[in-house]
Image (cartoon, rainbow, N blue to C red; front, side, top):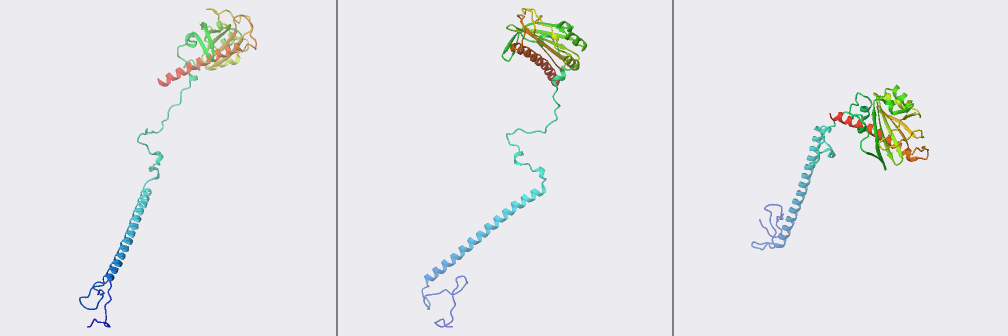
Length: 291
């Protein structure tokens, strides 16, 4: 078969194996067309790069999809098979340096201090004028009072006058403790009457009138006061204790409504009595709670 001009020629395909490559001449030993070969090689390399780049992109997308699906599926399986209550919130997770928490316990209610000064059965701590009225002076706010004489008697009527002795006796008073404090020419006697029950002390408070007065205690450098002069008195109670004050001038002058220092002194001593009785209850309640 002749391969001259006009005869059948095989077209060269760079992607087809054993295809005839084009030559610049038609005879044997002719030089190849190097420009055509270079162009064909460049075309082949370009197609190969596109193929690998495209394949790599597809592979990356496939791996990313597989990872994403794996995370979703793992999350779904875990959540489906785990009770909701077993997955703690982030705020509930303990930190490495945090203090471990424990379930709350049912603590008993605190003891009521007043309960320990409301009946003879529970109010068993020692008592005396030195315990009820301690120290040599009393400071209430900006006021300082000097402590004078004290008295203690199982006969309550010996420390009372006016209508108070009758009221104390009718309600079973068992003890009367008194103390006098002074500030300048003002003197105050504080009396604390003790009963077996709170109900008895409350009756004394309700049954007392303006003539139910504790007797002023003098001596030990304290001049007589409220002996015929007009004085100011108070009555109150807390627990099984009733307490009274009488305040006047050591000069014998009558107290008027303008003498505010006298009213203040009486109120201070009444407040002091309340604090001391309450403190007694708190001390006994604390001892019972820790015992």
